[in-house]
Length: 315
Image 1 (cartoon, rainbow, N blue to C red):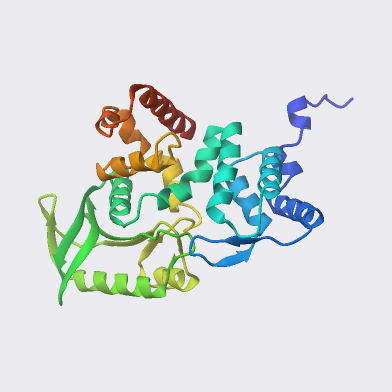
Image 2 (image 1 turned 180 degrees about the horizontal axis):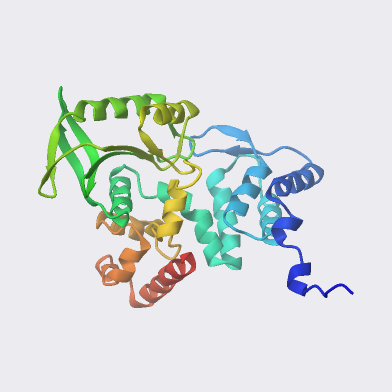
């Protein structure tokens, strides 16, 4: 006689029932059958393109939304779409619907856009990248002017630990569509090449440059990646490398930017960033900072609860 199979063993997982490569095809089929006409959307840079449902489905899936929730969100978003709708409006509606199902999933969905909100300039992103190196055990300084063999260079972040000295260029873009290309990688590598033979004193020790990094909050072009791999310039972008990219680093280390917090107003986010409060854990460590930016007591409790939820669910 064969042994009985437990219900847990017998029940296939959602991943088995709906493999990732099939999810987009399924929704694309429904989209093709249900939409009577093509919808044009307006991107952040003002350009127009046809709405691609598969991109919305994939972004929801990567955030960890269950299949049923993805279907509900896609149906609702498409039901309210009009020709020329902005990508920001599509995101906003999808985020609101996700938040009703799960704050954690909504937070994961919002991280990429939250990184854009650290702008409009690149200084907060430099501080954010410095925090990453601090998590990795480095001491850091930002906005360093260093004399190379030929000329002086402004280096966004200098980080050191043990015998290592890292120099980092933090390339910030305020639109998803903008990428760090080969030209950026070439000039960053050239600047570091001018510094490589010099000796610098950090942490009370004379050091030479040992590690060179180029970070970006969006993506790299294929040529930039090829050049980085060949030249020894370490590239870290939103989805590069495949493991250990910026998104992974944020999730694995609980470095969710304060711009993820939906109960903060845009002005409150701006005020916190101006005070060098960049990640959610900074607020837990110093909740009084909310008083400094004029948050009312009843609002403060709501914000702290959301922050705590973001941190706890990221563990």
